[in-house]
Image (cartoon, rainbow over the protein chains, first blue to last red):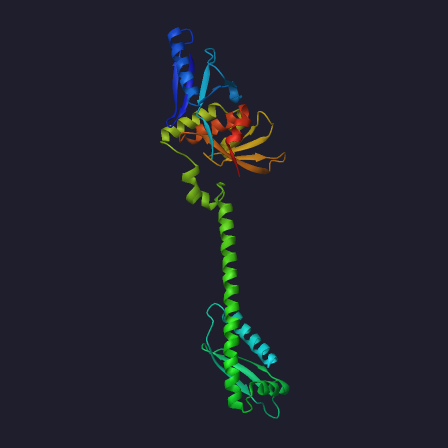
Amino acid sequence: MAVQIVMDRTGDTRHEFDATDAKAVALAEKRFRELTGRGFRAVALGEGGNPGKVLGRFDPTVERTLFIPQLQGG
Amino acid sequence: MERVREILRALFRRVLSDHGREPPTLTDVFVEGGTRWLGPQIGVVFSNGYRAWAPLQRSDEWRSSEELAAWELPSRRRAVCREAHLIYAEVLAAHRLELRQQRRSRIAQQIERLAQSFRPRRESALFFTVGRRLFDDEGSSEAQERGMRLLKENLSPLQREQYEKHRYFEVIGGRTGRRYRIRHGRMMNIDQLDAKGRQVCGWCFFPEGHLVAGDVMLAQKLALELFEAEALEVANRF
């Protein structure tokens, strides 16, 4: 099962989907587009604390995608 | 007479240095003609009972009498008294100005110290009294726990060990190779370090949306590792 983790006020919200289920993948892709369209940055999390990589487009093979809200200076 | 004025100024400065915070009122000035053994002297008396005097030379006495056109002791005393009040007012005004400047300088130093201590360093008392609520965490305890779990899942073993021990962890900038320390917190919690681990400057950026500390620190770590330039572009340096 792949998971999309969205950072929010509750800590995070997780959306799991089966990468072999076309309908679930389409839904995950839609979520990806919506979030990145709102300024979230999608990151494929690496294993063991490794940085991973920034995702420019939806990749159903990525196991854990983290969505980080837009950054702002303080 | 100028020498007499100088003597009076010196006497007034002495009383103000002893009682400067609450300057007493000048109540009397005495000029004593002197005796065969003791020379003439001039003295001042204040409302708080303070007295001070200084010797006069016979020539000073003569010159002041001539300048004031007061040859008799009582008339000379009245004339010197008038002059003394003017001089005291002058010295007092200068003294008050100096006190005001000292106070302003102290206030400026206090503001500077306050500004320094307001930087949210964990060791500063102000952080604990004021800054902690502002900088430390947000959301319910469940949200905070979830955020911390997500952070720890995505720290390297070394970063996790650092964080458990010191409540900070270090990150290497993905683009520049610079070393950063992310302290526990939500804002103003990133230090850029030099090769010896000394702080070069601080950076402040965080994700929008009032996120919990764990999420914020993870976002900061990933931003510095994966898109350092963009993160520093929005960040404020301090």
